[in-house]
Length: 399
Image (cartoon, rainbow, N blue to C red; front, side):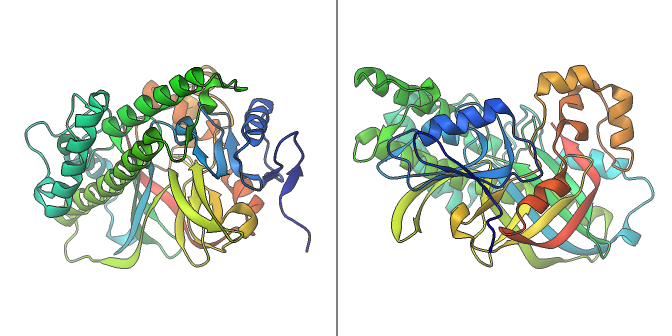
């Protein structure tokens, strides 16, 4: 069977890239090659079809390592990922005008830099959040720099800005889904920044020269490594909980508008910026997925398009060569700055005409034309996942 990936040789470990039919910019390729040259890379680096240049490491890359982790490869949006659930509602249950629903969701879930102030979600009172809080208290006692102005409790169940979103979607059967995208918010950002800086300081202390300072790493067995793994684990747990709380609040909003609906057992909550210790090719390794989703055999995942394009619920095929991974979205084909220069408000309004969403200058950098063709991205990874459901947005909330 012919391999679906391109095999790229480097003067380090090879790169296996699922990019057939999808463009990969020169800057992103050089960035992946720098990663492949690191001495602790295991086997090869896997590149997903949504690959594009990123800070620290290439977005859309899967980096397996033995003996070290690169904090900037995980980045500052630790545990960023997706959440989705299918409901018993259909398109026929939706009103002709969806703006009131969008407004109600925006009122119920703080977006951008917003938080809940003193009106923290009830979820923060639950035992599992209290356990998270206890771990965080210990972490900030050891590393005061990870403390945030907005407490984790106040930001629990908040969206953030940028490419984070909440959507109401329809699948091929016209069933209504709720889907959202967010991460570990301000606290995850502070944790990421602190350990990225610590890794760079370690490289200077040890006189280690790197092709890119953002590839600074922490060595397994060191106190910093252990503390980073613990902190990332905490942030990933918080991000998972953040999405679950948000989803619950959005469903509560919908319950006030649509009576007697239920949610199905088809629900997904998955990270796409994170680390995990996994077994691949018979060895226990650290896997950093920077804009990539775990796609173990039978595992459900989410691959969203842009705010005007379709999205997919997928089931992993467990492809060993990709370290059982798939893309985390369509992937940008131009930077945010380039998108703002290239597209007009009229362009954005036309591309999102079928979606109840913001159509102002603040979201031009998220307009569909700034992203790769999601159909080409899916075709390039047909050996990584199978499509379970195809979703199209009817409401999109952005920070």
